[in-house]
Length: 300
Ligand SMILES: NC(=O)c1ccc[n+]([C@@H]2O[C@H](COP(=O)([O-])OP(=O)(O)OC[C@H]3O[C@@H](n4cnc5c(N)ncnc54)[C@H](OP(=O)(O)O)[C@@H]3O)[C@@H](O)[C@H]2O)c1
Image (cartoon, rainbow, N blue to C red; front, side, top):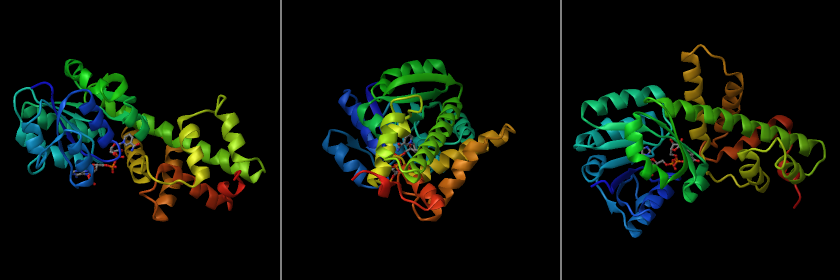
């Protein structure tokens, strides 16, 4: 039974992650709330279940990759949830980014039903999910992680045990603080180059080869110039993560001024109705503040 996996949540990230499990030879049972996510995987050999409970009944390990904390609660503890399919040896790995506190609460409820849980959120974006090179930040018991390591290795290149339940989510929030601030740094550099009369592409090329390089410079910068705002990572998900980071900091009486600023600038992007665009849409807020367009300054 150990080669039988379940996957719930087949969106931008879940679909390629599930595909990599199929390619690694696992038998996979999937469930998604809407159809489009499922069809492609069925064609590639996955079995379809009718709800999260049936996924659990058919699997030794069930992975969830949904949206926010209430979504994970719903598919695990809600009606026809994973908990109703509890059986000996079942493990739940939640790879969504959610609240560390909610993670701990779900882990306790699942443990009462005999289900071990790991929080294992990821970083690396859609391309990292496609390439199977995600960085995976795991929280929970070390021995459960070791049992599940081969499964995680089919989706990621780096797997770090961060500590007990919730620790993976805390490290992921740290990641999102860095990702958000790097994005803002990129936007500010782009508007400065454009306003001061330098081709933005030249700036990206030079800065990207030096100490200022970042994932944002390499991946989001070109999209900002090409006006490609299709989501790899949605603004609304980044806002969820920054909200969770700020809430976690508040519990610790810790100021995170940079994170709060990025959160407010993304609020301006959301106020323009752009929450389902990719996070590269942050440049639009900076362009409005500076009354310019980086694309207009870019080489055609
Ligand atoms: N995209 C990235 O670059 C990235 C990187 C790292 C981490 N993450 C995190 O990974 C998670 C998924 O992100 P994503 O970009 O793949 O999002 P997405 O494209 O919006 O996909 C979310 C998936 O979860 C399903 N879902 C959401 N709420 C549900 C619920 N209550 N019950 C059942 N299914 C539900 C959705 O079903 P429907 O199809 O019915 O909507 C969809 O299949 C999020 O926590 C995000 O923060 C994303």
